[in-house]
Amino acid sequence: MTAASPRRPETIAVTAGRPTAAPGEPLNVPLVLASNFRAGTPDAPVTEYSRDGGTATWHALEAAVGALEGGIAAAFASGMGAATALLDLVPVGARVVMPTDSYSGVRALLFDGAALGRWNVDQVDITDTAATVAAVAGAGSDSSGRPADLLWLESPTNPLIDVADLTALCRAGREAGALVVVDNTFATPLGQQPLALGADLVLHSATKFIGGHSDLLTGIAVAASGDMAARLVRRRQLAGATPGALEAFLALRGLRTLAVRLARAQESAGVLAARLLEHPAVERVRYPGLADDPGHALAAQQMNGFGAMLSFEVSGAAAADAVCRALRVVTNATSLGGVESTIERRAKLAGQEHIPPGLLRFSVGVEHVEDLWDDLSAALAAG
Image 1: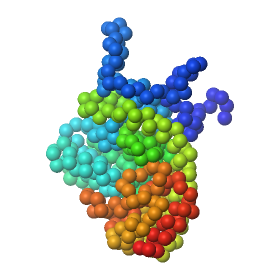
Image 2 (image 1 turned 120 degrees about the horizontal axis):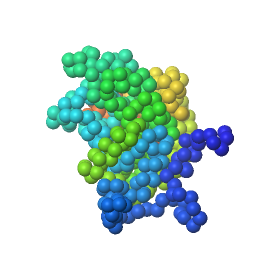
Image 3 (image 1 turned 45 degrees about the vertical axis):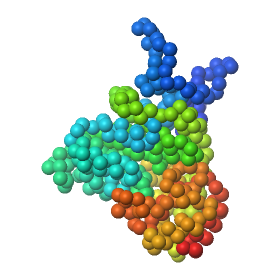
Image 4 (image 1 turned 60 degrees about the horizontal axis):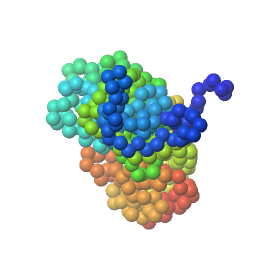
């Protein structure tokens, strides 16, 4: 690679969002704890209130994630705050096509909006590309042939780890005139760049892999166009879903180590998935890194690695709960993407009726893989 060649994502994660290089200046953008600023003049306007224009701390995080995703980023108070702003981009009465398997918080948000008459929702199995394309075009739905206004995608999905053909589905969305949003939380900006595959907008719960340490709440939306990014910032300004200064600072610090954390966790996930596949107490393993996984070929084509998220199924809810109780290294907790491995029986949550009762969603952390396996195998034997 020559000096003029584009930098690789692992380097961008470390170098983007830095202050202007000058002798005596800090390497990192400082933590800016300010809500208001000294007024400017008509000839030299400045940000006077942080909700309106943000702070240097927000801007550094946005610059780094935007550079990784190839778009323009806006930070929010949480992933759900960013999701709400994205949904605010569609008009009242919009038709939304969403995955049958998707994050429970966004599902609840979409269904609440539908109940209030804000939009209409059609669910579809996004692993069935033809059926999804038809749904986006308005065929075979209750829309009387009306195309979708918004196509909401996840890949891999939460928690079934399904993989969608993002290139084909983004193209179908554009042809139908729909906005296409991809929740990229599981893949991370290092593992997948949906804007390059044709999406209009990308969502991250930066609480998860970007932050990486289970100590913050932050969401990030990334737009392919400046106009769309400005609309997102306007929604943030009016709705007040602004990120905290410390949270933005910590999320950027977490991003700096994402490459090494993800590489370790992803390697361990592959090892553990293969071993779980052979365990007599495990009925199914869902991980696109397995050669016989239904999403393997697509994931190999559109992802850089197979990620650190997997799910596996045991004989039922009682057996899954027993595994969670028996674990000592892996933590039974609801979130994911941190340095610590976490596991949860997702079917226990409301609105997750499509999930097998014995399915365990497993976020692989950076512990030694043999300690993780010892813990898992002992818990499976005890269950």
